[in-house]
Amino acid sequence: MSIVLTHTYFLNEDDKEQKIMKPYAPLGLLYISGYLNEQNVENHVYDSTFYSAKEQLDFLEKTQAKAIAIYANLMTKINVVKLIKILISDSKYGFPKIILGGPDVTYNLENYLNTGAHFIVIGEGEQTTFELYKAIVNKADYNEISGIAFLKDNTVFKTKPRIKMKSLEDLPLPNREAIPVEKYLDTWKTFHGKSSMTISTQRGCPYTCKWCSTAVYGQSYRRRPAKQVAEELNHLKSNYNPDTIWFVDDVFSVSHKWIKEFHAEVLEQNAIIPFECITRAERLNAEILQLLKEAGCYRIWIGAESGSQKIIDAMDRRVDVDVVKKAIQDTNALGMETGTFIMVGYPGETLNDIKITTKYLKDADPTHFTITKAYPIKGTALYNDIEDKITIKPDWETSTDRDIDFKRTYPSVFYDYAIKYIVNEVNAKKELKKENRSYFSFLKMKTKGFLAMQIMSFKK
Image 1 (cartoon, helix red, strand yellow):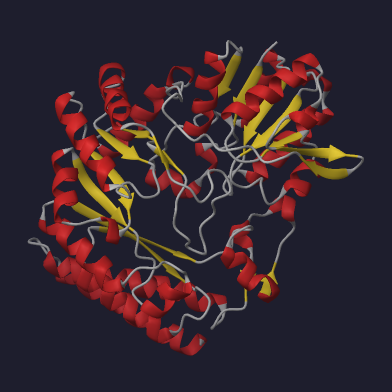
Image 2 (cartoon, rainbow, N blue to C red):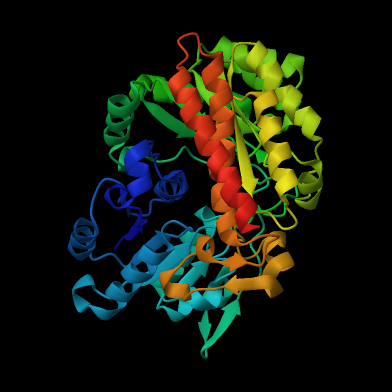
C-alpha cells in the first residue's frame, strides 16, 4: 500500500512559461513526502512538470496507490478537476481515495468535493496527510482528524481546524531525491546560463494585504532556525551545486534578529550560495541590506504594487510609497539588483494613479519589475470587497479566479493598455541609461507608450 503525491502542472502546456523557462520544484509536496518518510509511510512523488498527462496517468495506473494526494492552485485547478474525474470513473486506476490540498481548495471545498474528491486538507499538509492516510488504510473514523473536509450525507463536513505547527525545527528537509532535480537544473542552465533551486525558511505572513491569500499557512510567522537553513544550503551545494537560490518566503527580512543569525551561520558554515528573496521595504535598512549582501544576496524583490499612496492604502499595505522607493534605490546603490511588483486595475484606481505609478517606477528604477491586472482570489479581503460588483464569473470547473472580472473605474480593456503604457514608458527610460543605448529602441517604446495612452484616454 502506498500514497502518491502529485500535481497537474505541465510545462509543455504553459505558453507563457515556455518563453520564460524558470520552473521550480513542488516544495510543498516534497515536504509532505519527507514527513511521510519519517513516519515510514511508503509514498511516491510524481512531479508532472516535465511530463505529460498521459505519462502521469500511466504512472498512476502502474502504482495502484491506495490514495492520491493532489496539490491544487490557480494555475493547475482545471487540470486537477480533469484528473479527479478520470480517477473516479476508470477502474484501471483502482479507485484510490483522492485527497486535495493547496491554496485553491480552502474556499472552494464544496466545488472540489462535488467533482469527486474524497477529502480536502485545509492548511498545512504534513501531519494531516499522514493521519488521513492512516485512517484510509485502517478504515478508521475520519471525524477525529483535524483540518479536513469531506462530504457527509451530501453536505460538506469540516472537522475542527488543525493547530499550526508552532515550531518548524523538527520539520524534515523536502524530499528532493523523489523528483528529477537535474531536469530543473539543466533547464535553468540552458535558458539562463545559471541553475537555480528553492528553499523555504518560514511559513505564514503577518501582514494584511487585501489581495493576498493566506489559505495554507495563515496570517502567522513561524521560522526554521537559521542554523538549519545554512545546513540546507550546504546540503544543496554538496548534492546539486546550484548556481543560485530563490528563497520562496513572503517576507524574508521580517525578523532582523533572524537575518543576523542567518548571516552568521552561512559565513561560519561556508554555506554561501548567491540568492534572491522577497521582502517589504520597511523591513530593510542599511545594516540589514549589508548583511544580506554579505550572506550572498544578489537580488531583492521589494513589494510595491502601486506608486499611488491612495491605492496602497486601499490595499491595506500599510507602507509609505516613498519608503518603498528609497529601499529600492538604497539596494541599487549597494550593487544588488532589485525587483518589484506592480498591480493595475485595483478598485478605485484612476488614470492619474496610473501616471503616478509610472513616474514612481521611473524614479525608483528597479532592475526588474513585473506587472499584472488585479484579480480577486476567493477568500481574500479583496474578493469580499468586490463580490457584489462581479461582472464576469465563468463556469467554475473550466476557469480560475484569474478569469473573474468586476466593475472597475474604467472598462477592463483600459487596464490592458495601462500595462502596455507603463511597461513601455519605464523601459524607454531604462534604455536611455544604457551605455550602448539604442535611440531606435527608445523611440519605438515611447511611441508604443504614447499610443497606449491615447487608447486609454479613449477607453475611459
